[in-house]
Image 1 (cartoon, rainbow, N blue to C red):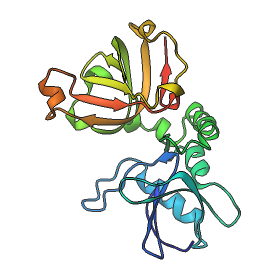
Image 2: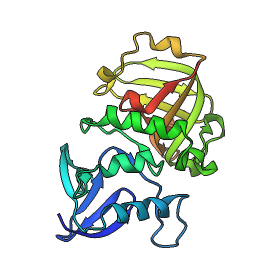
Image 3: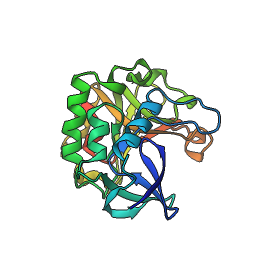
Length: 229
């Protein structure tokens, strides 16, 4: 496929006008309107441009081929059949994200991210991306975040809800429960967990009006969390 433009570190525009969202990674965001880029967003974009300097991208489509924005979901390779996602993760220029059902390379990507994290490369050594205490979160923290907190409560029904200290609750949906092997969820109460994913501000929703916590992070796979103690 011919690449017309690199939109940012995880999104391309092809010559046919379609947009491609890389599977398995989330890169720091470029602010195309006001230039208030997230730290390392420009470095991630530059790495993608260099990787695809030949102007061609080779795509392997995901099991789910499009997201709800209409973007094509694909693994991206260059002419040498090298993985763009792997390069970004190895340099610490993106976080590993997993959105079912596109999980074919999730285990491999998790290993690469762990190596970058241990070496403190890129986002792992950048203060802006340091893990945030759940108790200190607010509505302004909506978006992709790394969070650490202590589990204060567990509710099990169709979904599993893990309340953290502060305004954040984690949700494992009924369709995703089978991916988690933990048998006794109540044993998490009092333990610290580190999670990464998208924080959703629901302070204006009916849930918040009913007294539920205003911030929500869905957990879709075990790759998003780590039980610390």
